Image (cartoon, rainbow, N blue to C red; front, side):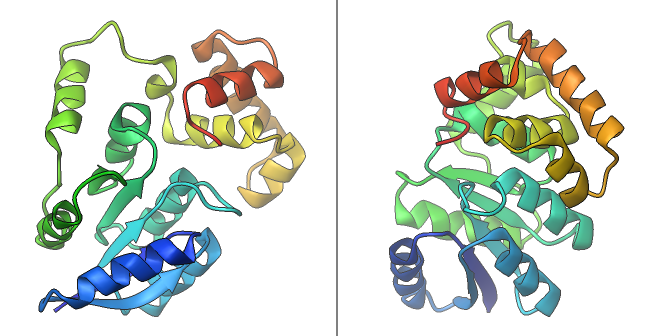
Length: 210
């Protein structure tokens, strides 16, 4: 039996997935969370084999939650189910430890197939994501600037884009203000932007925040 935790801030999405999984003899939903804090509580409880997680959550972004989960349980598969197209996040999240990336417009059977795949310790790669990965390996010149950010740089970028202050980030990420400022400078340089408002515009334009 594969124990699944569903992390999504929309109750109707969780209910629909739970209902669909109930028809599968080898799947059982053992936890649900609507935000990053609840997701980490489930991970700490240990009664889960696969995390199925959305990226958009009210308190923390999925990128940050993924990093926190992998820091605590490096071998726990995290399958991303997102409303964002693969081109926005997939390759970055796979590099940071996600076991797979699915768009919410996919067939429900694909989600079940992906859960079974990552449960066996393998990555679940859709044809679209495979193409993105191949482009990256071949040095594709069309790669978006944010895809070159490190894990920490991406976290800082997304928090800044949502209007979070450097001081608040330093506290919540257990970093010094100087360190966060250094990450901000690197992000600005890599994205060739000049201000926080530029960051927000870039993130909105590329569908990285809502």
